[in-house]
Amino acid sequence: IVDTGTTLAFLLGTLASRQAASVRVVSLLDKPGRRVNQVRVDFAGFTVQNLFVVGYGMDHAEAYRHLPDICVLEED
Image 1 (cartoon, rainbow, N blue to C red):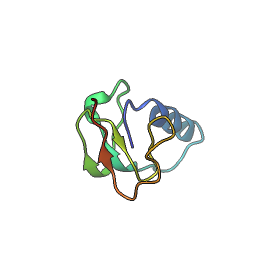
Image 2 (image 1 turned 135 degrees about the vertical axis):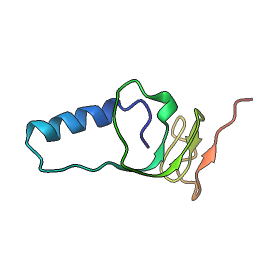
Image 3 (image 1 turned 90 degrees about the vertical axis):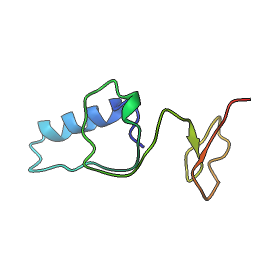
Image 4 (image 1 turned 180 degrees about the horizontal axis):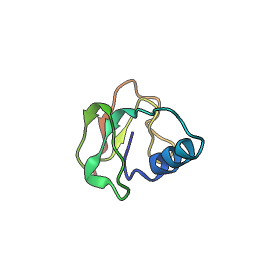
């Protein structure tokens, strides 16, 4: 998932410093509305709004990670 882009910006900077010939960014989920770093996602499976998603390895307080689907966690 690409959210704020902070981790991706760091990785892209590291790859650039090592003179990578080319880099393409692929993400299952892209949240462009949350960006604080200007990074480009070349290929995204899904673009999601500013929602908290869980499942398929993503968790909230160590819960929901085991879900086989990606779900939106709604506030009570």
